[in-house]
Length: 349
Ligand code: SAM
Ligand code: FES
Image (cartoon, rainbow, N blue to C red; front, side, top):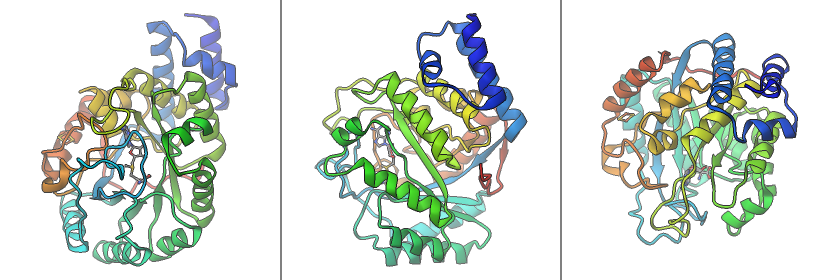
């Protein structure tokens, strides 16, 4: 193993810091031994800072209708092939009831930017869930909104908000998101933080045109932002999008980035994402062993599962919530960790 790699990893462990060129080196060609050294260091830090617990969040994908047109996404506005749906409040509350029965304490409500879900409807949804289960945490993931809207959701009781920055390369961001601006994405993240949400940012790995140097910028940006949670997953092509022929990102690079994130932000909540489990049958287990400590099993009703198709090859599209709950626990245990059904609030970093 190169001395330089050892030194960079050691400084990451001791000081949670690395320079641009050092991160570039860690994301470049490492020998299998060097890559394993990084992973083991991340796993050690994970065990000493956040233990061997893995938090479960119940994911409810409540609408696949979206006004945005992100080139990579299967529910983009221009995709005429998508079979659109939206869940009404009653459907959403049945998912929550099922989640409660299965022991979940956190619900993540994710959807496209669907104009049917006005601020009033989102507020109503948050209040109704909190009434149903006052101790639970509610996470929203519904895209870019005005600050005032975020304030209303927060006042209604929403605790957390997930909004990936997707890529910290402004040029790539604007190529992939017609009509959207990177400034506004950053403004949203800033507003969410200031309002008091536990914030989740994150990015895709291996987007067409994305370089390792872009990932270095993603890492440095996250170090500065200090979010409570960081969601990363490989880009995967979807057959009815303009990027249908682009190669997917890899589990290996995603796991390496997870390890570096665990070292840069030792207490961060780091999911082993569905995309990681979709690109490789053992992807989530590998993600956990690389430093991840959250999994988000699906709680959406089975009749809509196969319609929230952001990318091809998505796992669990035919499975009942109870099946996923049990499957995930088995996978977590087999990777050497234990399930924690607590709310798993993120520490202020
Ligand atoms: N509309 C909300 C937003 O923009 O944050 C939430 C829903 S959006 C579909 C959820 C996430 O899916 C995105 O942040 C993106 O990173 C991921 N995603 C979309 N298409 C993908 C693809 N083809 N491969 C991997 N991840 C994808
Ligand atoms: Fe859904 Fe494994 S998590 S079947």
